[in-house]
Length: 332
Image (tube, rainbow, N blue to C red; front, top):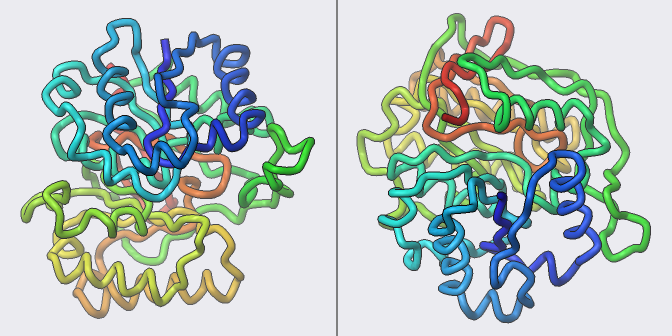
């Protein structure tokens, strides 16, 4: 049984046909039973005013003995407001698969900090509803969540798309924007393979958590593989540079073992080049880590298809290939 929750935006109520397509993929393509929580399809005005109700759905999904996994319906911009209302003890006593991306980064990262493995991957309306456009992605989900192995090597996607046709236009159900040929992952620096535990998410969303009690404490970053991606808002290369510099000032860039960057959505070729230049400038020059592997243009975040990255599990990053290999079973 999979529970669907709306921790951020009321997408299911705003675009029910896209939401229903996501449910059909869960039913027909993955063979799953689905439980919609009480406020999954609530109007956005209600969800915005009542973050405690969104948290109640999350708490109840973890408390429900029939539910084995929980998937976010879609992202948004204020799930951070649900965190004070989570029943942390109940959740940690009943760890389950919790998957989403974008604004769901708040839930994934916070629960990961508390010791639960969480899963950065497609949401119901953004990623799962469009799975039929990417048969390889369907196989990837099965490998990660239903047929896990002790070791899993991620493979770069051959094709990708940046977002979806306008959901308000009839006929967009399950569709993706024009697929483009991928040029693969790109290593900016690093000369040897390293290992570390995965942690990260949407860089703009993580900014909302800095300085709060839900942010990692000093010492947390040692040996982590930090993965970051930008949202559909397409933060400028300079904005990402300033955010990354903050990670340096808090000591994270001195401690992590590798940095992975998701394919930025909506960037021109020049912007991609500038972003890569900024990464090396911050990491290698400003914070003295020319040794640290940096791999960009990876398949996670706000483009499709999306890799499933389990926060808290150990992975190996090899910039020479470049490659990413999960060294633990993604689910028990």
